[in-house]
Each structure stands twice: as C-alpha cells, then as structure tokens.
Figure 1 (tube, rainbow, N blue to C red):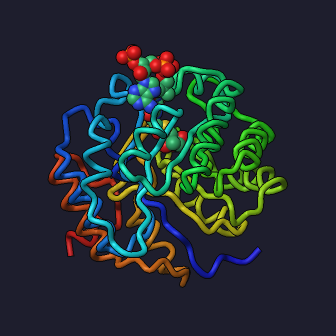
Figure 2: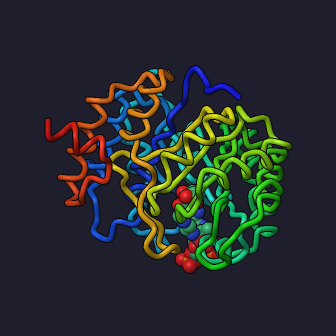
Amino acid sequence: MAFPHSVRLVEVGPRDGLQNEPEPISTATKLELIDRLGAAGIRHIEAASFVSPKWVPQMADHREVITGLTHRPGVVYSALTPNLKGLEAALECGVEEVAVFGAASEAFSQKNINCSIAESLQRFEPVLERAKAANVRVRGYVSCVLGCPYEGEIEPTKVADVSKALYEMGCYEVSLGDTIGTGTPLKAKRMIEAVSRDIPIEKLAAHFHDTYGQALANLYAVLEEGIAVIDSSVAGLGGCPYAKGASGNVASEDVVYLLDGLRIETGIDLDELAGTGTWITQAIGRPNRSKVGVALAAK
Ligand SMILES: CC(C)(COP(=O)([O-])OP(=O)([O-])OC[C@H]1O[C@@H](n2cnc3c(N)ncnc32)[C@H](O)[C@@H]1OP(=O)([O-])[O-])[C@@H](O)C(=O)NCCC(=O)NCCSC(=O)C[C@@](C)(O)CC(=O)[O-]
C-alpha cells in the first residue's frame, strides 16, 4: 500500500506527556503549552484527563485546563474519560471530544483502570451513549498492542478483538498504543493487518512509545500499511506509571521531520514545534528527548 498524502497528528504531550511528572506543573504552564502547540499548527491536542486525582495527581486540574483553554479555530481539544463520572465532569466543562481507554492485556487493564477488559468495555458503553447524546465524539485507546509489562507478548487477535469492540460501540477512531515501546516494524505491521480486518485503516491511529528506540521505524512500517493518524508528544515527554522504564511517546518533532521528508503533509511548522519542545523541557526541567528538537536548537 502507498503512503498517505497527509497525516493528522494527535498531540498527547499535555496529557500522556505530563501525567507522570512527579512535581506539580502549574495550570498556566499547561495552558501555555497547549496554546503553543496550536500555534505550531497542531489540529488535535489531548489536553487533560478526567481520572481520579488519587491515581494521577498531575491531572487533578483537568477542570481548570479545559475551561481555561483559548480555543483556536480548527483545533480539537480532547480529554480522557474512563467512566461516566469522568465524562459528566468533562461535559460540565464543555469538552468537545473525549477518549475511553482499554487494553489488550488483562493484567495491564487491572493495574491501569482497576478492572478486567470485559468490565472496562461494560463501563465504556454508558460513556459512549451519554457522549453521543451530548454530541461529543469519543476516541478509543487500546494499550499494550505490541507487548505488556506483565504478560509479555500480546497476540494481534487480542488487540483486534478489543479494538473491534470499541469501534462497534461507537468510537470514531481507535488508537493503538505500544505502551512500553517493545514493538518492532514487522510486529507492528502484523498487528495493523489483524486490526484492519475488522476496522477501516483510516479509523486507526498509531500511538507508539520510544522506549526501545523503535518508534520511528514502527511508524514508517505502519504508514506503509496506510495509517494516517499518529499520536505523539512534543519533546518525547512522558512515561507510564505501570510500565517501569517506559519512556515517552515518540517525539512530535521527530515524526514531523520524518513526514516532511516523505512529502506527507501535516500542516505543522517544525521550527515552531521544536521551539515549543525547547521551552517546555526548560520549564519543567526535563531533558529534550526529540533528536530533531535538540539538533534544531543547536543550530
Ligand atoms: C478508572 C478509575 C477512576 C477507576 O478507579 P476505581 O477505584 O476502580 O473507581 P471507583 O468507581 O471505585 O471510585 C474510587 C474513587 O475514585 C473516584 N473516581 C472514580 N472515577 C473518577 C473520575 N473519573 N474522576 C475523578 N474521580 C473518580 C470515586 O469518586 C472514588 O472516590 P473516593 O470515594 O474514594 O474518594 C481509576 O482507576 C483511575 O483514575 N485510573 C487512572 C488511569 C490513568 O489515568 N492512566 C493513565 C492514562 S492511560 C494511558 O496513559 C495509556 C494511553 C491511553 O496513553 C495509551 C498507551 O500508551 O498505552
């Protein structure tokens, strides 16, 4: 299959990137990050997470973040909502899009959202119904699509089953998470092949972490399969509390550089994005994990 002509980047830095930071990050810093990302041309930004503050303290200011956003025309600002409680709180803040998140691994599901895969799907059903009634689109995530920190290998058929359930429930797009970054290009292709037997490829997104340095190679492999939505995190921010040693999502700057080189349109200004990566890493005292970002900053 040929590469897509354009790719939509879903920037998950403000949520996935920051959710594990141990030191509090001010709401003002989060809002500035989100605004800078929009100014760089990103059209979908995952801004917050309506989860329990006991589980993820860094996302406790979800209300302030969502209500404090300066909405740029054409930019979608979304938030995670694991259950009805989270969804109702998000709707009260006027959120325009939400996401539910499940897993292809039983053990990870238990650690992450405190329930089995089957229970999680039951929880998501009323979330989808309520969101539909409120005219709010729902994205679905599946974690551990290329490996689990507890169960190791995950069969592509398991990923396909959970993805299909989310899609049939009404998720407009299913994002496939290589949560611990253990995937390699062949595995990634096989997983996409399995999932796309049930779901049109244009309804799938790649959400790859770079723990083993394979994320760009894996993205190249799935772009060849026709994937045209990529989740990434500016400066490669992030990690996962339930996956020891996991590094962040693939860096947005590195993905844009790759796509620019392939003549695949993103609508994103790489220099502006790289400047945002430099700024946020300095603001929160983290190393910049984008190779492209570091190289551009050194010019
Ligand atoms: C899912 C729950 C809430 C279940 O948590 P639970 O303990 O099973 O839920 P519960 O219904 O029994 O409620 C327990 C307490 O949580 C409260 N509660 C219940 N729901 C909410 C809510 N929505 N917002 C705020 N508070 C909530 C509820 O009110 C109660 O409070 P208490 O009475 O003890 O004071 C919990 O396990 C949780 O918050 N987990 C956090 C999971 C998380 O955020 N993980 C990181 C995001 S996923 C991810 O990063 C992967 C992804 C998407 O990026 C893809 C990839 O890379 O793999």
